[in-house]
Image (cartoon, rainbow, N blue to C red; front, side, top):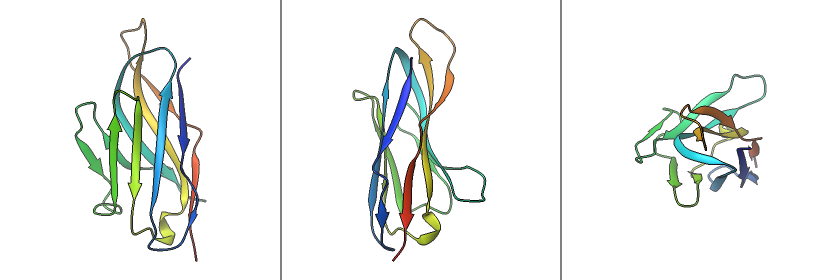
Length: 121
């Protein structure tokens, strides 16, 4: 069974920084694109950043220049470094990955359980 487990969410003041981590475990053949999404109260879930297995990253306009996504393929992990945080960054942040389970040839989408990030003074 494949699992994604996030960590690192916290309460932080505006202008502060946080680093989110997501570790993948289970019977895995390959991990393709990994991403971070977020969902604020009353809003739809939105893509924050993604990174391919080769390291190519993309960002939502709202976080460009402030957030950095990275991954460690050996550790089967993805990270989100968040700087210059704003109150509007407050949301539950979800890890997402396209994974080919061991013994399969088809990738499936997996989600983590989410971690709360609150930016407030």
